[in-house]
Image 1: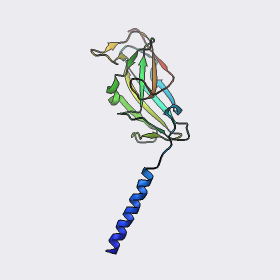
Image 2 (image 1 turned 90 degrees about the horizontal axis):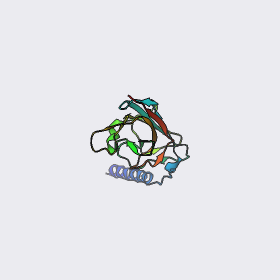
Image 3 (image 1 turned 30 degrees about the vertical axis):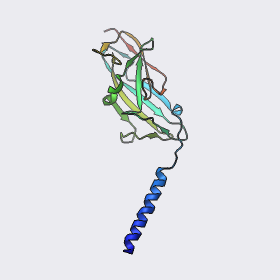
Image 4 (image 1 turned 90 degrees about the vertical axis):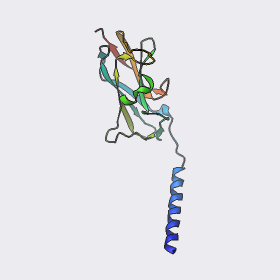
Length: 171
């Protein structure tokens, strides 16, 4: 009986110690500390061609950065016309189009980005207007389109990269 009580006491002490670690306050750097970059796999496309959009976030801060609540990916992209109208991605339908890429790491994304770490997510986009389009998808007119990457948020990204340009050419 004495051994059983010792075991219960040891479990209670261990549990209390774990609870103490779980409730520690963690100091996080603001999202604005992230350095974001977006690159496109092709600078020129025909309407409907698919290209990759690579969004990378690097944490140069001394503290981890906590991702906001997100449904599938913490890093997303937006495509805008020269007049500033958003044309892609199609809102909440992008989860199946994303591939997280963490060099040397499994593809599971945790709730924070540690100091000195980076996260890259690769998205696929067919050069079409598919944001807020109730009917059939719309083919893009020829011209320059701005692509930005950043921390996911709707309707706007919470923190954005500098833009990259994709030229849609005449078929």
